[in-house]
Structure formats: structure tokens, C-alpha cells
Image (cartoon, rainbow, N blue to C red):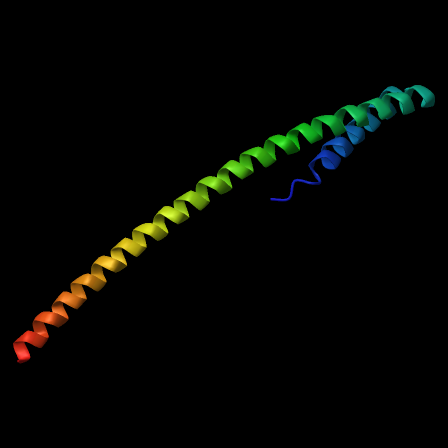
Length: 99
């Protein structure tokens, strides 16, 4: 999963909410700009933390799925080896019967 855009999305959502808040309460322009800058910086940092957490959990999930796939492949190899050995034994007994 691509998580590169998570900080930007979180920051823009927070900025949009603050813009609506500022319009509703008619905050003076200079105060609004300063507060908006602070809000954007804070939520950019929060978005970065969320991205790191998502990357860590996605990495753990991928590792588990790779391990499970590897175990399944090993089990399939063992099953195919067992069936090959049984078929070879069956061929040996057939050839002895023909003689």
C-alpha cells in the first residue's frame, strides 16, 4: 500500500476544517493565516507519524504472508515428494510382475 500521501491528506483535511471554522467565526485574516500555518504544520507531523505506523503494520502483515506462503510451498513440496516415491514404488512392482 502506498502511504506516501498520508501526511498530505491528513494535513489538507485539517486545513479544510480549520478554514470552515475560520469562515464561520469570522477570524481576522492575519490571525487566521498564522493559525492555519500552525495547524498545517502540526497535522503534517501527525500524518507522518500515522504513515510510519501504517508502514510498520503493513510490513508485519507482508512478512507474515510471506512466511505462510513459504510454509505452504514447503508442505506442497513434501506432498509431491511423497506421491512421487509412491508412484515409483508402484512402477517397480509392476515391472516385477511383468517378468
